[in-house]
Length: 358
Image (cartoon, rainbow, N blue to C red; front, top):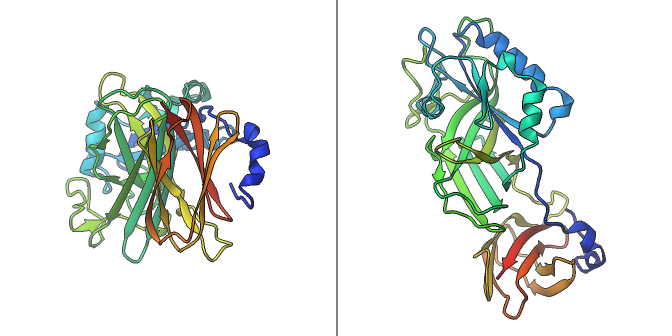
């Protein structure tokens, strides 16, 4: 939210500061191949369904190219095979909706998506990414906020995908392929997460450089070796999907999100602080909490604390912060237990983070 006067917001905080959950974003994962005849109509049906305007902003979609039938898709990777084994996929095409509904994408109905949308999100995911096309590097920043006491053993998954590819034609009639998974960060195993309690937050950062030059493998029998080569057709066409998931039982997906291109800054201002990467720890906290954010240039930063009624509890100004990683300790002693909002702002931009005081 753009902001010119932080204190002016005090009067309207009751309306603007809320602790309600975000809406669920549904994870749609599809196993497919350019050598699979039924995958062509399956992908067409899926894309047509997702393109319906009533689904806008409610889902993320990711395609894993497989190693069969025949010699399989040239863009098959061993990481895609890990996801295949995770879901015990033995036939394609096959689509999973939040790890639940699984079947031929030709048979997915709007009601299947609606049922997934109706499930409460258990987490808020805020994710941004940047692509350095010259150096073939993707950087991702992720902030999580949990709405429940997280199950031990849950993992964070990050997938870099290409919006559209054309070179992996394999004979099933398809000539373009959407949301093709290229690399998972740090791998297809995901990142084990320390359990986050209700109201708690966590921050993650990933950087990956695609090695070598573009290679089009002849087929899936010679999959891409990420250590020496890559299969990205256009680095300008990359996206990032983030989700959290349990590893056993129902393989529950807590929430998913399409990362937003570009770390939050105010493009209209010459000097701006990258407050979009802010995090707070520990959270929940007792007497003290530490606010961490990244500053791109020297500028004053305001840190305000509001209670659940929207009342300003404390206010501090950090003068001319030094560019880089900034840490600031907040004194919480004497505050009643409950939910609070920490607002970090420059003169032109701000971000809010939830904080639980015990």
